[in-house]
Length: 635
Image 1: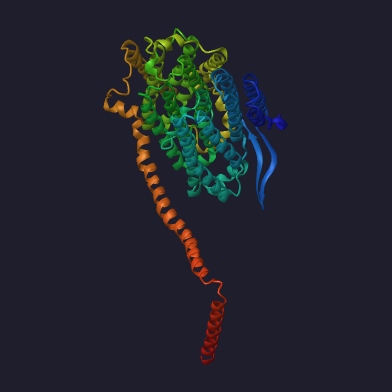
Image 2: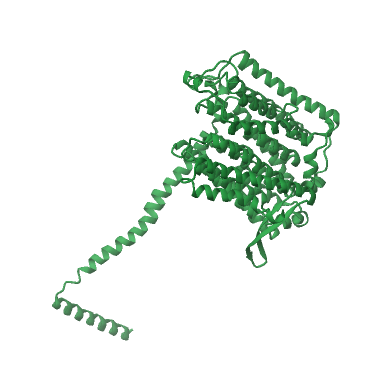
């Protein structure tokens, strides 16, 4: 398998090339088959790699020597271990299901071939990101998924707002990427290498957990904040819902936005040696989880609810990383990939059934009309709400327990946030599937279940969302944490430094009972308000209570950024353009040109063509030379 590891990223790259070149000549059926099957084959190779890793530990392969400057070398090399092998399964497995779903969802789109080529390119770069054995190869994948995100968010670029959303995502990601790049430079300065195998063993002895390691990890964290949409660089992700729904599922739920979590988990020993950075990560993650949940409470666009839910769930993962629960955070990456991809694809199925409508105020009563979509989305909602025995309960409970062991305050905030999650997710379900239909007669006539190539991925993801938690059943429930045992070698050194924070079984029972009770109470309150009470959110023209209005308008964060950052930058840009550029630089350059022209115009008058004038000037010149010579001799 070692000799074939390079095929895993190359197969999607081949799909990009074939579908990109043949987008106008190949049929949609062939394009869909090529794009999907190549990712499926990559999934098969990833499964084989996973089982090899279970027996051998890791695969480290140098593809070719890339950069060599003196003693400094950067090989183009792949490292597949326990951590990256699971990411390979997520990227290729969920990626294949989303490709399959896209065949039906994008069937009538004129850019079908281009869309599949972009999807394949994204999978290639995401695989490169997680397979790289050094930070430079990781950074190539990191930038590549940012590029693909831009292309896919703005796929329908003829709509100006969609194009603006793509540019916004690109710019905000570049802010974080600058931090990541500076972190890599500092790693080279401190360790003389960018390879994980060189840096991690030296980290404790060379840096010793002092100021350099804190600065390095803070800069790496800035990169993670941009890519994984944390405060304050989170506003790009909700706007990214402008892209087609499969894009939301693949990039903004299951894979790209978890790149920041993967990078920190991969660099876990560096972060463990920087407790200050860990505390910053925990606080930012907690604040993001709570803030995004508050915004999601009042959103009426079904995809916007899921977008803010994604931001909030990513906050949970960062909280887990910050309190040292690396396995718990990565466990939530895994389960979230299943239930959030399911919910986004389910939302796409609803939108497909409603003829493009995304406003939940114009839905209702759909559970009897699109039964497969309803049942699968209900499974995903129960999972994300943290209700046992579905997958989200186990991964979220592990983070909650770690937060409690770290800080009671952290626990109280995050468990309340978990209750908000349950409320806004079931609010979404009740407004969409319960009650009477609130759309137009034409929409009601149009409502129908999605085709099989859209519903089969939903069913598979629903099954995974229901059972994936079984790989992380805690000891208090009589289980064995299979995922924790599998990932133990990756986090071994960090675990030795941080130690085990074991809670008593009674405490764990109380914590689990509390979180489940709060989730059920939130579910019940949502039912009483939106089903029993038949409440429908007011239209945009009607007045809302002050707090609800703040939440609905996302606490005016975009407007704040607009006034505090964009407008001052625009004013500075205008100043530099009109004063520095036009009056200064252009004025100086144009002045030189005008001076040369004016001088030449004056000198041109001396060329009269009159021989007598030329003899006169010659005599004047001779006299001037003689006078100059006499003066010089006299001096």
